[in-house]
Image (cartoon, rainbow, N blue to C red; front, side):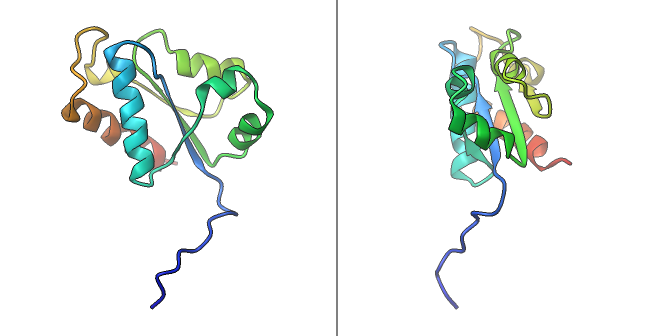
Length: 126
């Protein structure tokens, strides 16, 4: 049995665009996205690159199998950024829907895991 990993070059990525805002919920969204990427559920991608319309980031996003926007608060910055760049087909998670409130939510493993669990469901749905 070989320990060699196969190339997934021809597989379209699942991209995760978290809010990484200054509030506690932004930190939770960011850390959840990093955990999802570490666990192989998707690839954390650059929301600022979407806002700046960076061609390589835009092209990769256009070819994604699935896109997930994770927003920390009701301002929905990640969702709005993707929509303003022309993306309409993506999953969206707002941490408020999980009971996490801006300025009142501990950046804890428990809260990060809540976001990870819901995100995994969204990333695996058809």
